[in-house]
Amino acid sequence: MSSKAPDLNDIKRRMEGAVSAFKSDIASLRTGRASANVLDPVMVEAYGSRVPLNQVANITVPEPRMLSVSVWDKAMVRAVDTGIRESNLGLNPIMDGQNLRIPLPELNEERRKSLVKVAHDYAEKAKVAARHVRRDAMDGLKKAEKDGVIGQDESRSQSDKVQKMTDDTISEVDRLLADKEKEIMQV
Image (cartoon, rainbow, N blue to C red; front, side, top):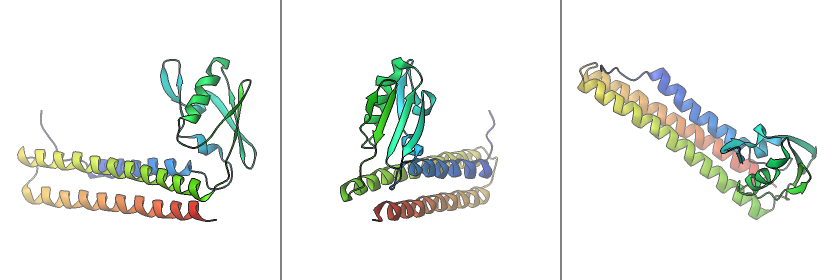
């Protein structure tokens, strides 16, 4: 099997994917008004596998501080309730037949701090993903150099570019985290 130098465009795309996933994660952290996005990270045990909540139910916002979840299959109501309770979002659904009403608690100081902690966890996950992409790229560069596909100078130049992409990605995650933290902590 012949090796080839890692594709910098592919590496950039994968790092952007880590930032995109992070943006999606922090969008689910609510900051005052109810939003169906709050339940995006919720996974439900359904039909023998874990699926996103929006694949087994419809989510609406009937009031500013209330979410309503209409479960399509009556047999799934308990699993949806469990998924929401175990999601670390601090939500306590109220079962009403095939519907769940979810009152959103007032954002007090303690709740805000806990949301910031969740945001930091999401940020760390995104940084780890970016570092994995960097590690894969560096391993590919070492192998390509060892196999004689690229020279030492080219390998060093590519390594520098990969490191710059990693640094830029981590800076972007830190910037997004700081913005979200400020948004959460505003009273």
